[in-house]
Length: 430
Image (tube, rainbow, N blue to C red; front, side, top):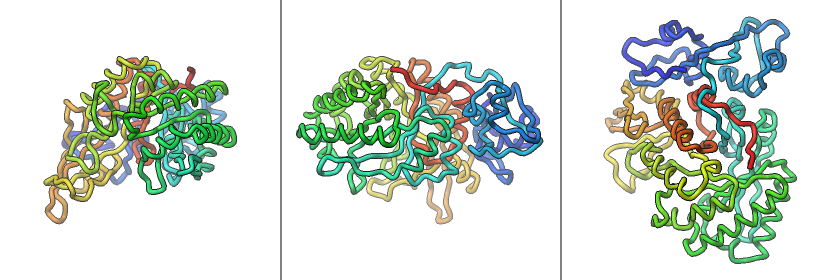
């Protein structure tokens, strides 16, 4: 695999000849269309095949995977151009194996999506996921579960071999996280036990393969109650052979202040669950000043602190799949910066003739442009280089895997880089 940074004069056709790869694959792997010109500074991931198969009449993905002894999921992963579709045409070329594929090790992977995600966006991503979590089951004022329209997502996960993971949060009817809902569960034994029973019943009814608990903004004085709740859940889940995961705010010390951090005790939560997702993103966020969403030095500090409290084999590094477009000058109280996918970010740079820069300190791409009304904008996003850096950090520190927030945005480069450099584990043992 090569990550090529576009310079003046580069074209897709010239790069395909230079590296010996098909134009169609280069376009698909980078979220490009045939009409798109390249943007100076844009990163392109170029996957170099080692073994290919030319489709003959009567071939199917199942027959090809059997012929070469690879899984159907791996065949999808090696050919993002399929977009999760099984339709083949005679003469079509499929990649069976890439040069140096999976040479850096393996990861358990997870991602999240809202129930309204388009199938055409989700299907290509599912083969790259060990787990897939529909977002989210909330808790009502009586302590029961809010229903979630997850039936179609569960069918798709099954079709593409991703294990469905039930996601539980304190998201309310208004769409915000509620420490009061968490407190309700912690302080009423009957409500807590009824909620746990309802969670287990839902898991069994719908075929979920584990639970991911994301309680945010917990009252500091209830941090040990949260640990006790997780311990009760883990016993019940593990008895059925199911793992329990939990998400943690991005702390860098035991004494870090703030409503997001004080209720999360890294050591206690880590000891009470089978796996932990570090939410290492949102330094740059919609209502803040222009920043990288996940600056690598910040991510490293959180990850290294986590290792002082939690074994690496339980840790998952959180990775964002999006960026933000800020209007300058930044002033607090202005309308928030809209989020955008990495593909949309590159399209925006192309539209306004901006060159893409890459900050090697924070390991993130960015650019500025002036819109039709003369307003200056600054955009920070993710690309193949920033993803490679985050995956390398997770591997350097011995993390068990990575978790993506989220699958709602188009980002082929992420999946291609992951598949080129790492093997994706099909299950999580605990």
